[in-house]
Length: 307
Image (cartoon, rainbow, N blue to C red; front, side, top):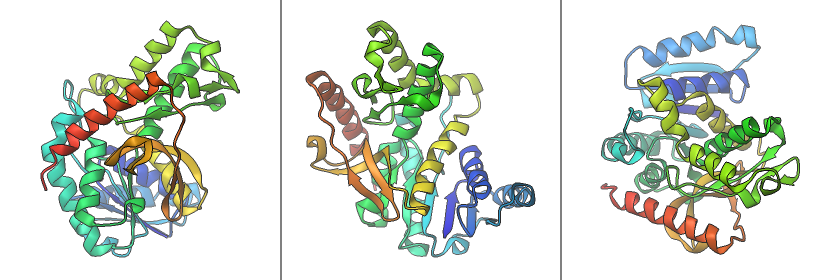
């Protein structure tokens, strides 16, 4: 197994560290346009391998030739959000970056499964699909796992319970229009709606929607990467080990939930082939309306992608 991480910033480098620590590949390639950055970070990570007991060789490079024939490519490259900047503000500049990356991936790793992390997420996955021409089941985005993790972490704080006992789903676009589903949220098998009043749940949902922006405002010079890389590694591990995890990700819809031709956050089964199944939930009228608004926001952003 050969895994390439494109982008040696905080997200990419932390992800590479997790891949090596978990020994998920024979070889991990860390690519960035900045000379010395991927090489230095790659060497630093490799020097930790004797301590962690990993045999995953990591190579830092500026050349896509080193990534040739990768089984998985994770695209984290792109400009980070700054305070006051929405994901949509990033669109034009990051489309150009992701387009260039996708062209290189198409040339060097035509059989790869591609996981996109760059923002605005749903539009960037769409860009990758169109540029590579890969099958939709081999191109999808990490979004809902992170959003759901934030949602679960806030619930754990409110109830003072273990995060391990909280099961939840966040659907829709990766942004302010995301759709957490309290009706599908369980705490040790108990519905969340039986444990918290509506106003408390609404406050948690609002904080979840603004979760990325909250961290950007605190850091001032960057965006989230610890939780982001943890979310990505769930996908990578499920592909490598064919675990068939059911996780919320940005997948290409072909009529599911009544939408067609867009990337959208939905529950999917992830295995060695990529997206192996999309699950359709039975939603009530309120949930359908929230999903419709989210889909419209994603459609509007995606429509602005110029290739």
